[in-house]
Image 1 (cartoon, helix red, strand yellow):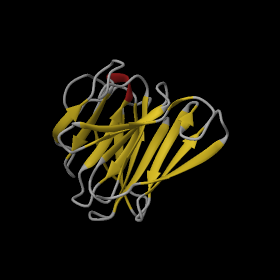
Image 2 (cartoon, rainbow, N blue to C red):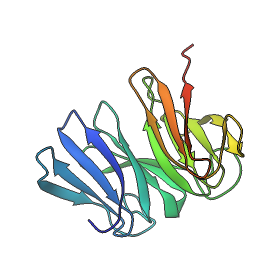
Image 3 (cartoon, helix red, strand yellow):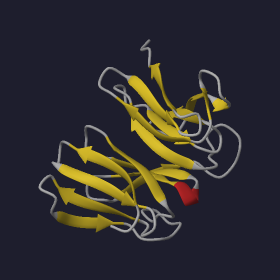
Length: 175
């Protein structure tokens, strides 16, 4: 690895997935630490990356990768084959400026953390924007350079708020 930026555990396939932002690829390891394969290369096309950061894996083994330099989220199957991507550079809902982190809740919603916007956006699998939470600032629900997001099995949402030197915790409420 050159510049590891994100990590996810693929429990279904018993693998560890690490994004390497400088090498523009994903490294796939067995749980024993042995390298199995790599996915991707630098580029703008499907399955190509430009500074990948956050990584998440769903129950089906699909891989969600924040493709930061391409301002999008890519979804790959467990073999690294491209399924879909969404997002673009911009300031309106559904767009990104500096996407960094990704996580999934128990209902399969996709949370993408954007460090420049100081928020996280919530999407469905089709890439439709459901909600944006937060903006730049120092108060509750505000962020300055958020860098990582994690959602536990109880749908508690943890966000690393780097410049504010804290972790903020939210709760996803089901309908």
